[in-house]
Length: 295
Ligand code: NAD
Image (cartoon, rainbow, N blue to C red; front, side):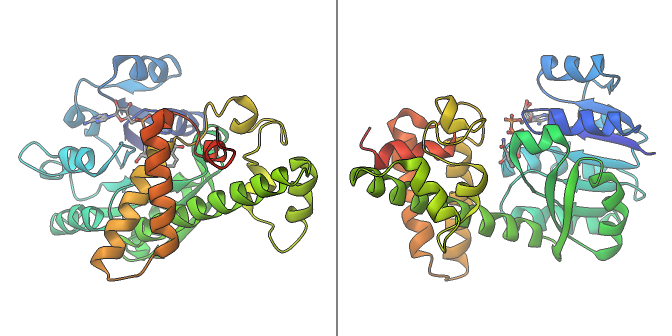
């Protein structure tokens, strides 16, 4: 069991840190939100008044922050953690950020002889709570092997995508595909419904046919077709449209930098941007079904 410091206890980080406690690790936490820290403290975590105190004595430090600027603030700059961490620390950033930002932080860590992994996750809040997340890691093999037993206490599938930044590249490719397949699924269901088909029957036909996909299997976007998914709960919970827009922005920026054509990803990005602008940012991303239903 390890001494682990966890920074960023939001929708994802909170339950991830809880799973580390459940696995028997000694966990010290820090978040800007007192409430978030209190929940963890009640579950047995130690709390600290700032990132530097939180990091003292950590064998492994994990961050789960909203975006690149937060990751830069915590690690870089005069007051950043990379100025003070000992070289024995294993640092894992699980936030979803641009690959370039992950590489800048990694480069700085390597200069200090600190092992760093970008390790964004897939699986959402449900996966974070259940400890079944997929971790998609970028970094050196040795760091990956050190991190694996810890990540296994929070996740089920642990992948090594390649060098620093590769985890973030794989994550943005996956989420761009997710946005595209969700739009395609919603469009097909709406067309069938316009023709008088029962969306539940059509879903099952496509699921068992060549159109079968993740949304039809476990995340049906049509209200009432599947129990326990956001679509059957007024699109509450799940993966927010705002977060999907953030991830599609990362994919778009990356495609521009790499001169990669992403016509489908760009269309999905614009559809989600419109959907978010129309006041749906805090709904689950499967709520794009409403757009195709003309609601
Ligand atoms: P969140 O907004 O719920 O939580 C972020 C937490 O970070 C907050 O509690 C905030 O107070 C804290 N924070 C911000 N700046 C800080 C700082 N300087 N020091 C300490 N704490 C700080 O976000 P989330 O939903 O937990 O997502 C975290 C990351 O995981 C994001 O990059 C997101 O894209 C990614 N992600 C989210 C999901 C999801 O379904 N929510 C799924 C996969 C990946």
